[in-house]
Figure 1 (tube, rainbow, N blue to C red):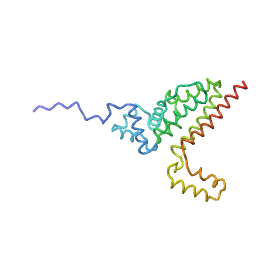
Figure 2 (spheres, rainbow, N blue to C red):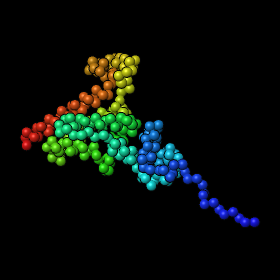
Figure 3 (cartoon, rainbow, N blue to C red):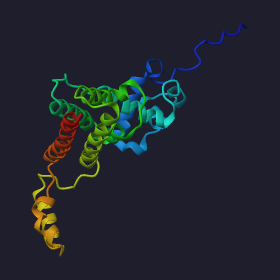
Length: 230
């Protein structure tokens, strides 16, 4: 009796293994974040979403931090930065709005865009854009960095509040707003009670506009003052 030659196929490759790319990993990580939050991200969770062996991900990312950095780089690198007009205020505002727009497309992942320390071209491209505007307006590199950080502090603060720590009632929950207003009015704190109609509701667009206008007023005034003194 002759023996049958062993098959060269020793099992089907894991689902998706042949098509595994960094882009696919990023999309799967975004799916995990959207479903279960940033805390649920890990090599096993993302591999499970892709249907592949967890070890195969290490050819593309370096563990959980690599996954989070890859998502942040993807989101930052896909910001549609505006064409510059040469007007300091308009250009900075347009960059801030583009940053916000991209962050809000994936609210659950927005904190990564705002807080990861990245060194790639994709991660640094918004920084480059702001610095170019400030340098063109006459700032030296040191002053440009100070003003950049002032702008980012305002932008990050408003966006973090909007996507993860914003007041619950927003502008459409009429019953919730009314209940919150009553609580504030009955707080026994005079200034709080007087401001209750405004504290009880939260318009994220209006808050973003107000904060950015205030920050940009300060930046433009600073640049203009430096130019006069120079």
